[in-house]
Image (tube, rainbow, N blue to C red; front, side):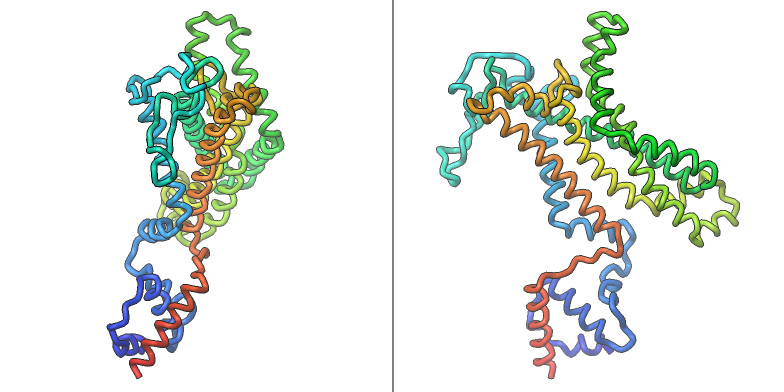
Length: 386
């Protein structure tokens, strides 16, 4: 019936893909025996689960903005300052090296002409200099590298512990669930910022208490961001564990799990091959949100003096070290703060996009303008058909 109606509609009126999709949904919903969601079912017909999730994700404007912004920041930080033995393209590869004051320590970055500036140019110190002549561009981008490293490592550690505890607790239940959840509740009640400060202080004073040599002490402090990220990841997993536990308790009662158990599948295979892939949406979304919180937490700890310390550079330490120069050199706060906001917002937007993509109950509601335009197109097509 609806196919005949579509065949009668003239083809001389062009509609955008979004408008045509709305028209098709209205035609499907108005046909006999077709209910709500028929248009959406036709939209994903013949697509795999990954294709459906990817299609929903790329339609989320905030997620695309976050992904592009985070990729651009990562590319700028690692290409300019290098990574490991690979040098970057920026002229000042040592963020702690001081030099002569240029341009009164003000930023040498100039805007392009279409923004009212003399023309785009980085200059020798695009983000300015501090009071002893250190390049702020090198320091900020080195701090961005540290923040990204802490974010990724913390997320991986919390992911590993949280998924393991939640999966075992939700699948086996009874005594296993009781023991693991009591440990989870204990860690969950601890104040994160206080515990993180204690861990940061302990890590900083550990070489002195153990009497390490200067070379060993220098190597330890060089890897301090990695150690701090792993320590924070070990205390930020309880929220993810509780969510994974709830998903596993729900999924273990489904028919496909009973079928796998009857077929002789082991518990390990049922957990990893049958239940875990169906809970991946909740895991990925909450891990991204946890990584976003990790950026702010690391910045706060470094600002308070319990996080990253010299010779490493962090966005939080840059703000803490230059807080006395807020009135005379405000650009020393602009750039670290801007990158903290951009990184945290980008990861949050990506998490929102993944949540909408993985949740089949989430539907993107068209705007009133789109609905009115689609209704006008439909009325025009029906009028010409008659």
